[in-house]
Amino acid sequence: MPEDLTKLHARVEELSTVILRHPAIPSEKEVLSALEVFQTIAKTLLSEKTSTPPPTKTSTTTSTATSALLSAVRNPHSQNAVSKAELLALISDRAFEILEHKPVFITSPILDTYISLQSLLSRPESFPDILDLYRYKPVPKPSSSQGTITYKDQNPDKPSAAVTPATASAAIDAAIKVRDLPLAIATIETTYCTRAYKRAKFLRTALLPLTGVALTPIAAYTVASRFSDWQSTMDPSDATQLAMAGILTYTSAVATVGYVVMTTANDQMVRVTWAMGMPLWERWVREEERAAVDKVAQAWGFKSKDKWGLEDSDEWEDFREWAGVRGMVLDRVELMEGME
Image 1: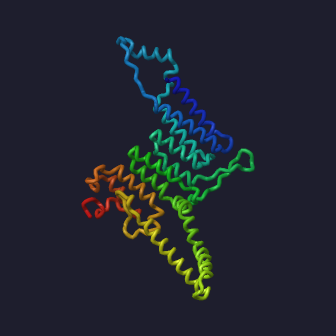
Image 2: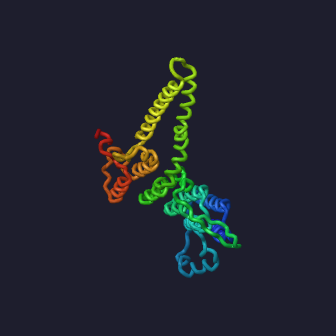
Image 3: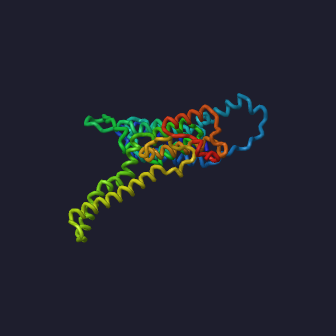
């Protein structure tokens, strides 16, 4: 087993060296390959059951310093033996160094793999830093001069710089698993709270419906003009205007009701709700943020609903204040059981 760990240790260092000492810009495939090997090694190590061999009966003289020295001389490699914990720590450190390496451009698949790896290792402490790098890290570009690399600053607020909901959820779950409340809050701030995420959500879910709304007048005019050709009780132009007004009124009323229903839905809220006066648009675009804060509150607070609101600690009060600053209310009294 020590020989196997030593070989794995050498393999991790070899893969890291290939990326960190790359003569040019490491490709996404090369970085992903290294991280995936790290993940495979970590899964293998964590799946193995640690077994301690039974102690052997030895005389008192064999436990002396002289015998230990002789044993080390006979087995020179024993002093350089690598433990499983040290190897797992090395994998975590090398993965962070690879993503932090300036010529490495962090793509969405690379970020997903890194989050998965560190979550497997139960080492999510680096998530806020890496998530910031994902948005702010300059883009490496090969220069016309041989062997040189130029860097271009990227816009951290562009939609493509947003973390995917699945990746953000996995990162927050990892922070919750290690019971680190400040880390969970920092992870929420670097994922759901960013302007890039809000813009990406708008493009992903709201752009198509709004495009339909913009095209509604054209469709209403087309239908209204057809309607005017089918009637003979009034002037065609008057009939077209009347039908178009009716169609637009109906569609506007239905769209308004649907928008209000969608933005005011609260069945999914458990312990964290929006403060009074929060704009409907902001409620919708920040719903994932509120849900993440709600998840953290349920993970850290009392499990029994009867004790909700009775948590008393400096860390919990800081969390309540942070949520309040962001327009959320933790354990609204009038919504708690028995307080209606």
